[in-house]
Length: 425
Ligand SMILES: [Zn+2]
Image (cartoon, rainbow, N blue to C red; front, side, top):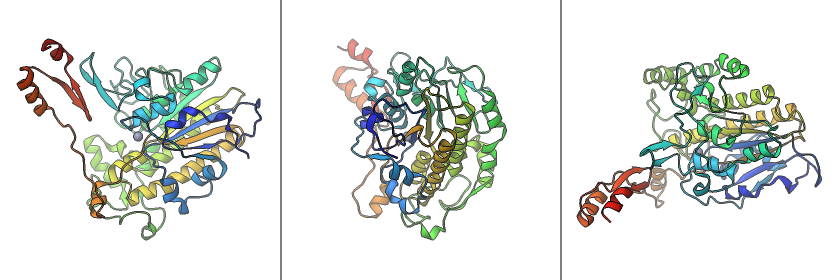
């Protein structure tokens, strides 16, 4: 297997790092790949490739490093480095000021409301069990994605399927011309994969069949133990430490995670199936769904290049919950490595070893846990966030006269009231 550079898209320069697995040995005018697979691992830092590497298997991350090309000279040239801007930047090849996904949420001056990156009240969820008024679409994207461009280049004959646990992880990579985007719904179904009326009126039979197997339910009856004896997790802080919270239904931030017990408590809060987002089985479930999509949609079966986008969200939720120093994180990556191996094996079998091009990258990284750093005498602090704008309002009232000066504070963005500014001249 030789590496050829013809498929390296320069727009990926903006990323933290990327691995391109390009088994194709085509000459300059050789055939196009039958399938392109884009894998995003939410919040994966580049150092996780090496930090846990001695216990990765040969067929997952290490296969990509061994047989592919590791593109390291990369930077994120925008803020905020969040999930929605990250996925949009990867797939559009440009920055938030151009592609329009400027945060996970932002203040919309026209409607005077804070809106989500894929929220859309003109659409509805397809495939949920109870009616879900929340609609979603990629309409806030202002530029085309690589998947949109592939569609146009093939006169819309290419098939584009995008899957994730998070809605944004599926919708933004698919662009506007995707055949379908599917994500994991914990609010209005028992952990089914759902889609949006933006793409379809009815969920396909194969998705209904996959959902009817009730895999989310089955996985939440399992207990999460470490893959190897816990005393061998040398890349992480001790499992029981002061930096990590105890999940609801537990009294310590430690293994094992008995989801069968934890889900009973979560059920009373309506968050039962969201528990899969902090389970390694969330990655396994998504891998199984992606492989089913590959087979049922017959991706990569003819000469017209198709695109399968997969975004693994669980590592991000684990990172936010436990931090990069946690045994939970280490174990998630050791197990995700196995899921990646399963995915690559399925691609070899279903599409053919030399017929697909795969890239693996991340939407953003993560900082180390601040308390953990301080405990180890390193300089760290949590920056003051804006919170509210009362002090600023009072200051502007004094200086320019009483008025409603601030429209809203969202995230770390301050939105001034332009009407008041005009009125007060
Ligand atoms: Zn993310």
